[in-house]
Image 1 (spheres, protein in one colour):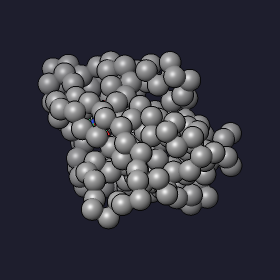
Image 2 (cartoon, rainbow, N blue to C red):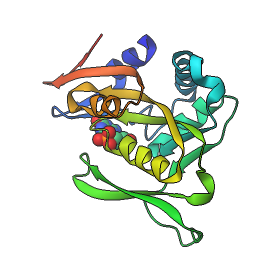
Image 3 (cartoon, rainbow, N blue to C red):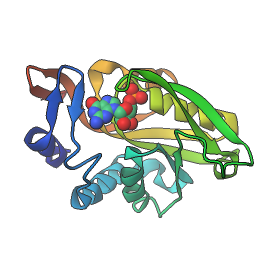
Length: 193
Ligand code: 5GP
């Protein structure tokens, strides 16, 4: 998605060789015009399965906005975001998975209330970043526990050098990323294509 790549080059900040800071338009301040285009692009990429999507899954917090805009292009299906903390109101049981956060350098956990993920539901994962794939694999794990199916994963930015896409594809999950970063070096961001 050329407009996204241009924006990353214009406003993104390379932090060392691993992290891309895009908080001016993606995950702190949100550019809603760009998010509309992102939603439309995900629809184009997943058009062949769009009619089958029952639900969009993501992880709080930065996945929520992009998932919500994307859902508008998939018949306004519900968006369910996995929570990182257990709220006291989550009483009826939940699916739970531990994930490693390489950006925060610690283990964390995600959970979805059992009433929002049902057996047989066909889900699309949408998230802001695909790095090592831990968050997405955690969602796959939650879906497996529920007996739900993952039709694919859509990511705004994939950092190809961290292997997340490979890990998902090894599990038979289709991956569509709107901007694939091949390398971050000396403050320069290089895209795969
Ligand atoms: P993964 O689980 O694939 O290793 O990382 C995915 C999550 O970590 C994303 O949902 C995102 O919140 C965060 N993340 C990973 N890499 C980056 C990055 O370079 N920049 C930012 N802002 N977040 C990242």
